[in-house]
Length: 487
Image 1 (cartoon, rainbow, N blue to C red):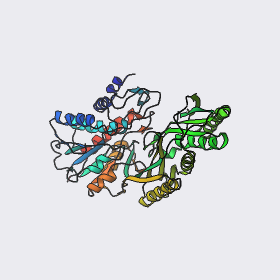
Image 2 (tube, rainbow, N blue to C red):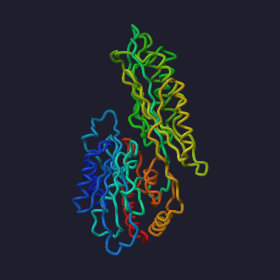
Image 3 (cartoon, one colour):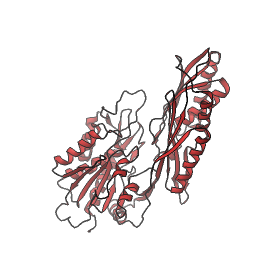
Image 4 (cartoon, rainbow, N blue to C red):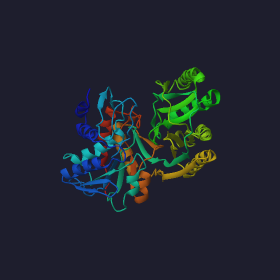
């Protein structure tokens, strides 16, 4: 199967537009090319097309005849995707298209993220704008920039940019569910400074590689109890330092703040006579990790190889403070919502740990649907690393989206879904961050909801979207637009 095959799937309009999106590089912070693509798309249809200073794109389409008295609808998606790939893949997200293909009931990509998050929602909005035979009220397609790395497009949206009354966010990932609330978040930036010290005479260097973990979306998948590569690597390092006189030269774990880290690599030194013991310990740890995570991880690989000596080492006191800080740092689910015990309330993703010879950077993403709990967990993380001697900054905080169970669009879409499928959709709060919370600060009176097709393992190379649910998502969207209430 090749990427071209997805264009033959139904509904063709969505899949053809999604294919076009896979051909345009669009990782976060590379918004010029995708922004120009979307701007040209809107103008090619003869529609009013705007692009604001921060890079958001807005395309307006008038109501079809007979629908002019209905409330205006904003179809909202984000233009960027999470650039994750397996370390053995030569893929440049800045220049290369996504190699998507059909795999049974799913569409996925070869060893990279697919970009169905949020490309399918965006493709659906594009298809509405292209259509000549769909009944709909006045439509605005709002495509925000840099959602995945700080929601900068949503934050920078001007209060007078939008005209519609109802905002339908299409960034949810379970068909049959309507989302009316989400968690807020805050980023922890942690920094250790150091000056490299010399390697002990007679020491040899080893590269330790932890790969094969599933990773995933740090909001959607955090409750699945998947392994965090950074936490496992530092479990190994703490005992290796204590038992085998190991010294840490460098660390490289994780790649994106909102992705559960799948891989971690460390370069260590050890006295030559201890090499065999360290190698044996690596194999023991691999067996231990496989046993501990056998129900959720199938491909854990923990390997060691001898390499040439690095230029220097992280000083022992910084190394020990770093190890203790990472070991002690909260990670994963901190609390579930008491009233909804299957829904995560508060979590932390210890996402990135990287050294460069003078600085160690640690980045984590703290989420909660309760503002005070978010602040409490941020304070815990800050305390842990402050005690370890690091500089800690909390940045990029964004609000959650408070549920409105009396929302008119929620009631209308529930009724439409029941009439169409003879089943009541689930009303949900998502632990991931949706832009609705931020957009609501700019437009506090706007009625908002989120829905989408079924997407699994977003933010990881295992990302896939279920083909049948894309068709159902599309049909439900069309029925919703036909039933938008009058102004």
